[in-house]
Structures are given as C-alpha cells and as structure tokens.
Length: 79
Image 1 (cartoon, rainbow, N blue to C red):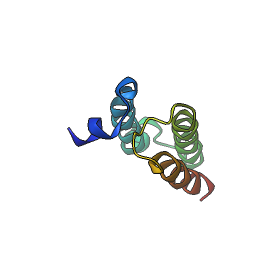
Image 2: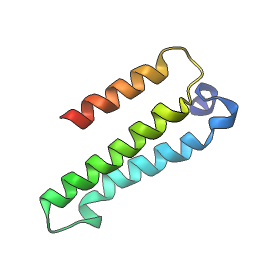
Image 3: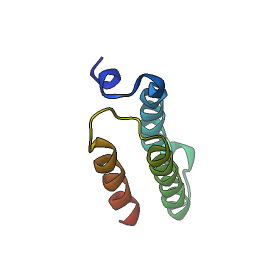
Image 4: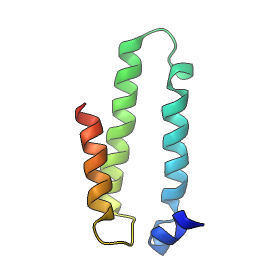
C-alpha cells in the first residue's frame, strides 16, 4: 500500500515496473548464463531504460523524490 501512496494516480504502473526491474536484475544470471560481458551489458541496458523512463514520467508525488531516484539510478549506471 505504501508504494501506491507515493505515486501519482496516473503513474501506478510504476509499481509493476519496479517488480519487473527486480525480476530482471535477479534473473540476469539465469537469462544469460555463459558470458559475463553480456550480463553486464544487459544490466546496464535495463538500468538505463528504467532511469530514462523514470526521468520522463516522474511518477512520485513527493517533491524531490524523483530527482533523488534518478540520481541514484544515474550513479549506478556510471559504476
């Protein structure tokens, strides 16, 4: 319930996006088994797409949460 109270009413789809993100991050070694470089590229593509989607839609209601979330994702993409 707390996740939906943080989101704008028309942005509830981001709850499912977060579930999808967690699933993709945890299943990467299962999806791509043999090549470590492909796993890294896949993880970066997933994180980049989530960051850009979040930056475009800005789903959080609370002022500053969108910017904080985007900056955390951006730092992860640089590392």
